[in-house]
Length: 187
Length: 187
Image 1 (tube, helix red, strand yellow):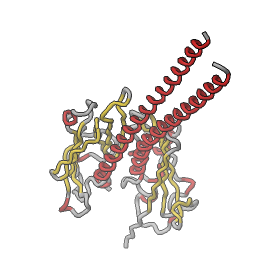
Image 2 (tube, each protein chain N blue to C red; image 1 turned 45 degrees about the vertical axis):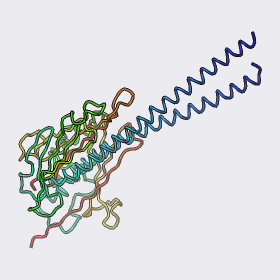
Image 3 (cartoon, rainbow over the protein chains, first blue to last red; image 1 turned 60 degrees about the horizontal axis):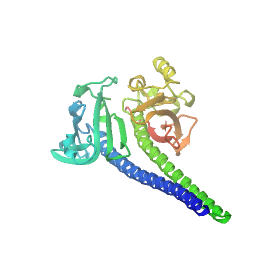
Image 4 (cartoon, each protein chain N blue to C red; image 1 turned 90 degrees about the horizontal axis):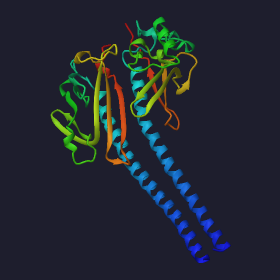
């Protein structure tokens, strides 16, 4: 009887230890996946933010007043800027826009898509996990405007998500910045 | 199971429990660090937008330089104790947002017209994924000989300090910038 009890309690203790180790292992794996995807999405967000900042602060550089923005839509923008500060004859035309979601159909995320940066007709597609890119345009009085020549500040928002789900949701980074390019202001 | 075996099992369970706790704590800290870095990315873009707004060409160095840039004595600028909103409309706006904060669309863009108006300015920026970020500005004179050193008297240099706080941040993100008065002499 004593031996049977020993085996019974030993089995219970072994079960508890096994469950504890299993739980720990699951937690560790989940944390590892989460951190990896979080790191990737954050790095992608920083990379895209730096690129946008580099271009947007130069918007209108060496371009006649009120002619800097060529098209201003909620999901895309085309503007003129002398990115290399080489003079009025070397003005670049830059476009930012999103491709359809079908361009990244291979990922588990149904919303991610390529982002295109087009400089002087040269298209650079980037797979950064962007799911949303929104431009909001404001005039000098902070009213939303759709008239290119009245735009004084631009609010840029984007959302980047991981290509695969972590647990039940995608790892997400949201970024937003309002640009007031100096060359759009009249002073 | 004799007493010796029981003590060994209890000891093993205790060690396993401590190990599990320690690993779970470390996983939790990793999550917290990840949230902190995500909030830091947002905080820096929000703080940089704030600085861009303050140093925008539409804002003068001082309320007294609106009509002339031919000022050869910095003592003519607004005194340190009076840095902040100066016009009646600016003071009314400042009092209305002092405790509740300015929210989007931000009125400071058209209410303020010089750099030091932003001294004491308080703004709440809402991020869709992380909630509210709290932004506080201070503007003060610094010594020409040490651009980090506060100056009680007027100089040609004003420092801008933007503090962005959020519950996910270990400590608030602080961004600093400097604006220099450019004197245009008329002969």
